[in-house]
Structures are given as structure tokens and as C-alpha cells.
Length: 296
Image 1 (tube, rainbow, N blue to C red):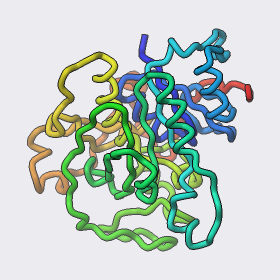
Image 2 (cartoon, rainbow, N blue to C red; image 1 turned 120 degrees about the vertical axis):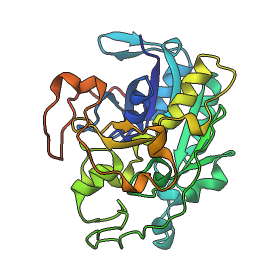
Image 3 (cartoon, rainbow, N blue to C red; image 1 turned 90 degrees about the vertical axis):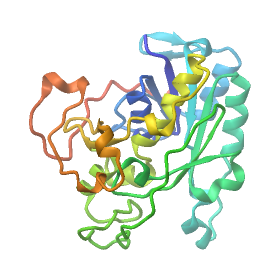
């Protein structure tokens, strides 16, 4: 049985997909219905549901009761509007959800991750920063991660490629910004490794490569391993599965400086979908598990 990670404030599942790739069973929680979420889902207030678990109450899940003892770890992506540059410019007020979710997660005694935008750095404790360029993606998408366990960060390549200006078509050689009313949703899905997501989902998501990286360290912490993997040993990715977006491993030669940019797109289907090997065009809906009715 795979260890369970709770994906709080889950949105359309960018973070959840990464934990799945790292070997976890993922259960998402969001106050808004998420029909695109690719895993099991509970519609409700994440803070309320986690408090239920913390005080020893189970929650109904997949025909059984889910207790705190059944969970291996937590991930939380509280809404980032409070810390985004756009919202500050517009002088809009949004609640601080980082402190409350941290308090609950720490009280469980289980390993946890809190993710947010760079503007939330002052609210996070010793966060690490990840960037799409670290994983060979066509988007920069800097995000911070506070973790209760050690995480090493891959080398941060220089930002050579320009970003497409918001709302304008992405030109050859440019990186896409999935913000606002961005152009080229199919390209956004490919760059973000989320072929199932809508424009709205992409705007709010992080690429699964980030949480696959974090998730491997989380798995090491759960298994009690003494030493985390070195960044040079991590399975950097490229060329998403044509069915779910999972990225193919890079060889040692391909990891050498200067070679990554020369790689051509090749057909790839991940191990999970080998039996369903067939050409597919984006967007591709991921098979969804039945979503639970709102519980809280």
C-alpha cells in the first residue's frame, strides 16, 4: 500500500501529480469543487477537515474511515493572493492561511510541506526555491517550499530565454508565463506538465516536477533514510507522457551542460500507461476517480 499524502488547497492537481510520481497515494482537499483533479478528492474547508483529523475524528473516504494514523504527510498550497504583486497593486485584502495551516500540520507530528509564491518569503520558515529551468521546463515559475525535512535544491540555470509578455503569443525561444489571460493554453499544459488542466487551473498550479522532487525527499524522511539524494542523482525530467504528462528520465549524457537544449521531442509513455500506448494530442483528460460530496 502506498503512503498517503493529503494535498490541501489542491486546485487542479499540479502538486498532487508530483507526489503521485514520487510514489504516494494522493487525496486532495479544496473548498471549491475540482472536477479536473486527477486523484481522490474531498470538497470542503481544508483547515476544518485537518482539525477534525487532529482531534482524533475520522473522515469518510472511499467507503471507509480515514484516520490521522493512516496519513504519511501533508502538503498545503494556501491561496497566494495575499502575497502576489498583482493583488498588492490593486490594494486587495486576503487572509493569511500560511500560519494556520502550519500550526495544524505541526501539531500532527507528521512531515509537511507548505508552498507559496516568492512574495510570501517572509511568512515561510527557511524555504527552498524551485524553478522550472531546474527541471528542463519551458517556464520559470519560481515557487517557495517550507518543509519539515531536509531538501536539497538542483542547480539553478541562468534565465537565458526571455518570458513571453502577458497576453501576447509565445514566440519561438520564449518561455511561457501561465498568468492572467495568457495565450496558448495547449503550450501552457505542455510546459506545466498538466495536460488535463484548464486555463484557470494552470494559472494557480505548480508543475508536478517540483513536488516529485520534494516528494522523493519526503519519502526518504518517512522511510528513515539517513542521507537524502544528491541533486546530481535526482531524476531530472523531459518529454512528458502523452497520456498523463509524466516526464521521461534524462540520461547522464543528456544531463551534461549544453545538451539539454539540443534534445528533440520524442514519443514517450510512462510505465503506468504502457498498455495504453497510442498517439494522443493535447489536451488529454486524465481518468478521474469519483469525487466525494462536500463533507464540511
